[in-house]
Amino acid sequence: MMRSSFRVSGLLALGSLAVGLGLFGAAGVRAELATWDQARVTAIAQDLFKAADAWEQAVREQPGGEIGSGDAAPEFGIGMKARVLREQSEALAGHLAKGEGYDKTHDYYRSLKEIVDDTEELAQRSELDEPTMDAWAKVVDLQRQIAPYYDPKALEEGADAKP
Image (tube, rainbow, N blue to C red; front, side, top):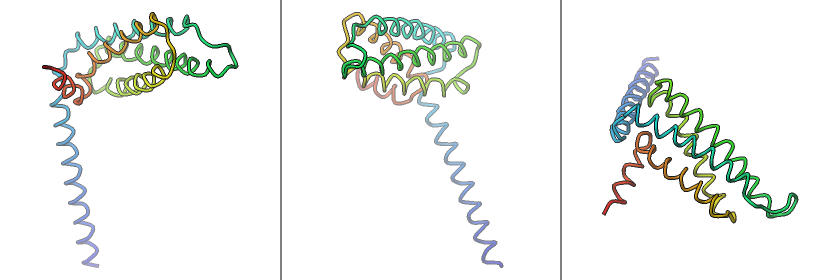
């Protein structure tokens, strides 16, 4: 019986250590983000929402293949991604406008980033006209601007890009 109580207390100690290290690690990641500026992040998010709306409109106006042809499938996928991107960017901008900070908006950003990444892959495989690509470039630029407030990797990538 005594052996099992040592095993349990040892596991509890290891569990506490793991939790402590996890919290320390999370605090370290948070420290590597850009200094939070509620007004700036909100402004970028609102511009991102406008750009995502313009992107969705450009995708809708994009000349595509006929319905039922193999050419229509990628554009249909982009159309769905464009709608979800607009909705997710609207949600992020709305929560930030209500004064919600990093902790309450981080998951919205993560979802948005995933949609941007997926859409980028679809866009590369699709034949999009210049106005549609210009609209996409605005979305990507604004996502790049907001990223350092949510993603420590964005700061590293930005530092690597500087001469």
